[in-house]
Length: 419
Image 1 (cartoon, rainbow, N blue to C red):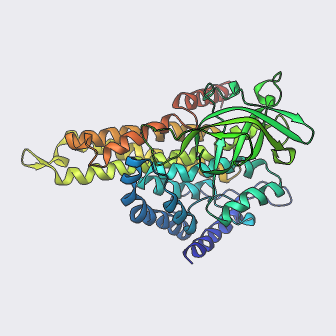
Image 2 (cartoon, one colour):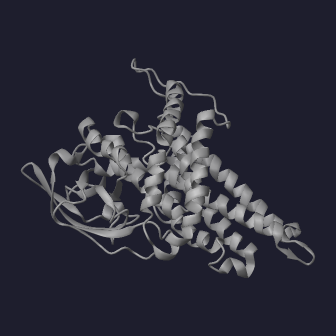
Image 3 (cartoon, rainbow, N blue to C red):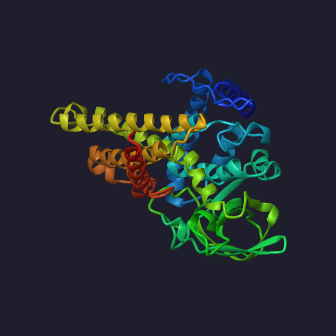
């Protein structure tokens, strides 16, 4: 019942938004809505549903999953029932069909509760993004459709032990044999690796070509013979997330599961980041907001020298800096998401959002621990978990250094063009 109501709310929001953002069948460019900062009633409803779920369900359970590393199956199932999972699967395949902007509203709230649980949920979106971008109708019906029929998970298999930021250095390869491709190689740090129903896989199909034409994308069923799932990695933070290595040994993938044209895999995989980086950034904003809320509440009740520590300028200015960074990060997330929803290139802004928000999360979490003092260093208080969880935001989905590389190249290109 609740899921149905949220679906209807989301679809109303999408239809209203789409009427001004999608190009007409005549080929005319989409009308661009005037920029504003007031969320619509439907967006507020979606945001509130995610907020309540984070407060009522995720926050109470988060310490248990952090301590045990237990995968939050029941929480993800509840989130799925509410429509908070797979938010950008198009409506014609049973999903909400939300844009990046609206999905970011959800991601921020879920990460406020626990970014590890949010990462497990959002990893579906990362795996699905290449399918949304490049799959045939039949592939979308088969693989996106099933995600809306039951609470299944998916994984994005690109990173390798020797190829993280250097995606072009990936060694996993696929060789065409008849109507099938035979895949061999190893992927690493795969979120939902041991829980996925299927994977998006990037494999090298032409060793002699440059990176832009050397790779092809595939959809691989996780139960395919020859796939070995490694142990769950015990990470510094975000321990509710399931992170593993995946080995492919003579795994046969039918050609019908090839995503797009041969040699277009790198472009497809990188294109997905324009969708997902703003969502990772929004999760970082959620964690940062949680850090500020915890720190400000503590600063109001903790007293030193006869008054609450919030009245000491040293502490008050730390809170002010948190607010500045959070508001700036959120606005950049919204801009990157809004541009993508207008079918405009957002790579530059997505990288700014990712770099800014991830570093904001780390600074806010660190300062929250400082404001808590000795208590902040203790696991009985919430902020030490936030500090551990925050670090990965500067690493996954493109390190902060990679984001700066993208941004600096864009700045140089604009300068050359006199923009």
